[in-house]
Image (tube, rainbow, N blue to C red; front, side):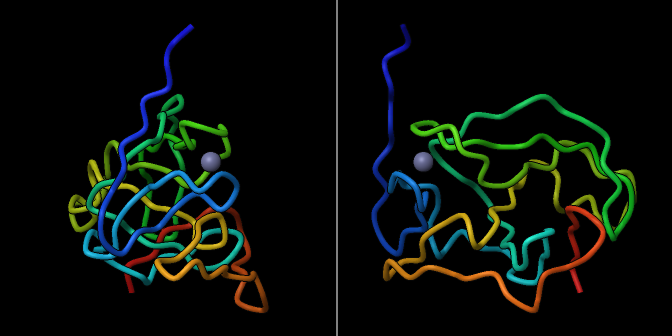
Length: 129
Ligand SMILES: [Zn+2]
């Protein structure tokens, strides 16, 4: 029956665009230069209020990674993915970190991000250019 436990964050908050659950903070952004199939994505040092799905091997722009999709704890929508293991040495810094897809979250000022011409082809990708 699992009572829902939602952590409230303070500061410049990124939240689920569907239900407003707090997911992460501006200060936890490690990189804004990631991409997913729908456009921009941000790498966060830590995220809150998510559940982690099954891990799988996924080929990204930067090589093979073991990742797990992450879901908003309240509404269950997929908000991004988490890196469990990076197979390339140069990508090890991503391990344990999470990516939130920008168009699935609301920014600190409540702004929405609309997908556009920037959409990347070729599946869900991570890039650290
Ligand atoms: Zn939600």
